[in-house]
Image: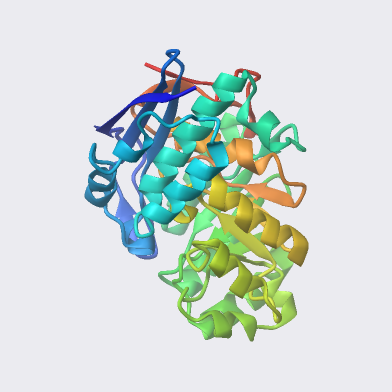
Length: 355
């Protein structure tokens, strides 16, 4: 079954809830979409939304990579050469992981629609559903509590709180959240490289009694040896994020002494499902737990991450709320969510439909 055509376009998805993290403020969401059509009319959808500060790729880079000239090699290819094509996509565009992800996701969606099975079933689904966290940006204590209450009233029971500007205020926010919500809310923290080692130790020691689930990338991603030198009790809470962009990074992080006990896989960093599976397998054989995260993204790529996440028994956390605050999207469907618990549908492919 040959690939007949590939359409690429850019779309502003809007953002109803702007938020701040350690190194930027997110107030709008642009995305690049890919529609890959087979000769029998089946189409696969993909989407890319890079974080330039993390991977060095702008949305213009994504769009330029997905030019008609660059994608000509795929036209007329038999999609049943699936893994070979995925590998070629990964090697052709080494500097633009979001562009690779958009193509990779479209290929997975189209191929699994051709087979008539969900992507998760094709990959080997092991988990039926998981609870996602919802994200609160860097805010003062009062505003943090107000937004947390809003999410609680919506049925969510797992928060991810952005930190990294002021460690003392970060600690105060954690204390107040635990006072207000007791054990009714799980709390995760994402410092986005905002801490020095002394800040991390202060945060860890002062919140030890608050049952914080994990701390994402507290230290600079460039200093993996500093992560490896941390005490085991600290590393047990740390999820590598910005330092984990590729299978090669995963191997380095997992090589003794391990740098963190949790890997946060994002398709926009890894370049799609194909390399993400390689990262997940390195984690699995190394005894490292998995978290699957996202940028602000279309339901296309959020669904792709969810399908992949549910296929690994070492997946313990998901943070896949990236499409929940969009003003609009290019697709409908893709996943089900109820009181924060996410699951995939039984539709072929990703279960998304172009609007």
